[in-house]
Image (tube, rainbow, N blue to C red):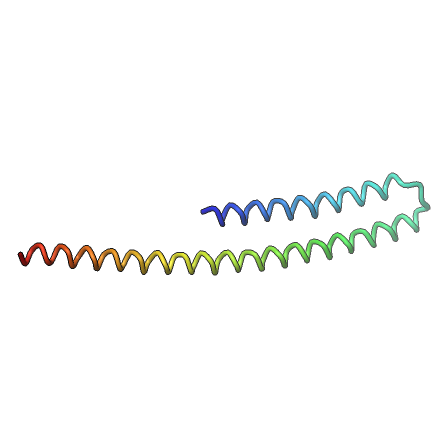
Length: 100
């Protein structure tokens, strides 16, 4: 359960960082005293940078999600095995008591 929360926190932080960088960069450019052609070029560059960062963040998020899924699957397998062992042990105890 904690790992799921960690994934959500990571997602929220990554999304917030990317959006914050994009908005801050665009606002900075809009308020800078530059000619129109230069401003458009800067906006294009900043947009491309933001898209690259977004792709990186998405890739990191996918990787982290896969890691969390694998860990969850492993934990579940261990839990199932522990449950089976406990069931077998209890069953043996009950069978021994019935035979006595």
